[in-house]
Structure formats: C-alpha cells, structure tokens
Image 1 (tube, helix red, strand yellow):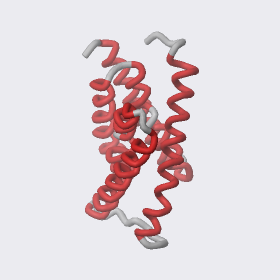
Image 2 (cartoon, helix red, strand yellow; image 1 turned 90 degrees about the horizontal axis):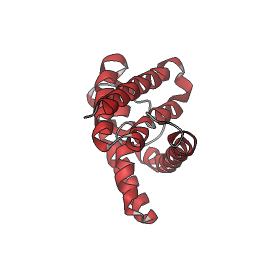
Image 3 (cartoon, one colour; image 1 turned 60 degrees about the horizontal axis):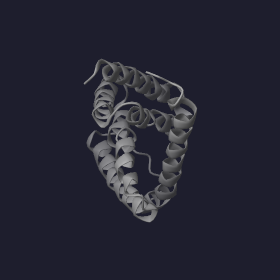
Length: 166
C-alpha cells in the first residue's frame, strides 16, 4: 500500500468514527448520519482502490466497537460500512432490475443477521408491530437510502473529485 493510500485511509477512518459518534450526539437523525458515514467507503473507492477501501471499512468497524454502543457498531459493521463496497460490485452489472433485486436480497439477509445479532447481544429492539410488517416497511426505506447514497456519491464526484489532488 502506498503512503498516499495509508494517509487517505487514516483520514477516512477518522472521519467515519467522528460521523458515527454524531449518532450519539444527535440521536434523532441516526439513519441520516449513518448514511453520511457510509459515504466514506465509496469516496475511498473513487480516490484510491478496493484494498484501501476494505482497510477503511475494517479499521472503522474495529474502532467503532471500542467507542460506540454495540447496536451502532453492529449497524455499521453489517450494513452501512460494507454497503459501499457491495454497491460498487453490484452496479458493475449495468442491469438496473437485476441490481435492485440483488441489493434487496443483500439488504434482507443483512437485516435478518442484524436482528439476530442484536438479540444475541441482548439489545432490546422496541417492536411496535410484527417483524413481517417491519420487513415490508424496510424495503422502500432501503431503496430511498440507496438512492440517497447514489446522489451523495454523484455530488462528491462532481464537486470534489476532479478538483482535488490528494
């Protein structure tokens, strides 16, 4: 790994942890803040390579386990952190219906694993409705998240990537 990639990775890990820590300070916007935290992996893919992006994901996940409550760390580790890499590979297919289907399958698998993991760690999930209804409502929320992440990546690419030279 080049020194430039290590420096970029360190900065992005720090930004990720600061952003994730904001979920504790501003608890009403947790999903929006987690979406912002998930933007750093695609930025790393744009500015560097997959190896550095994996480093940022792993390092951010490990540090978050020490600093954040377990439920936020699990959400980042299982979904928000890794999704930028998954999205990158899925969108290489260039077949939108297939991409959406694969993304939804990935999301539902991760949602199931996440709920089971939180239960394993004894995190109480306040369920005001059945799990089936939750899964049903989660699908459009995920699609909005995916769209928002795509919009943020596009905005970053247009506004910052061409002008910067790290």
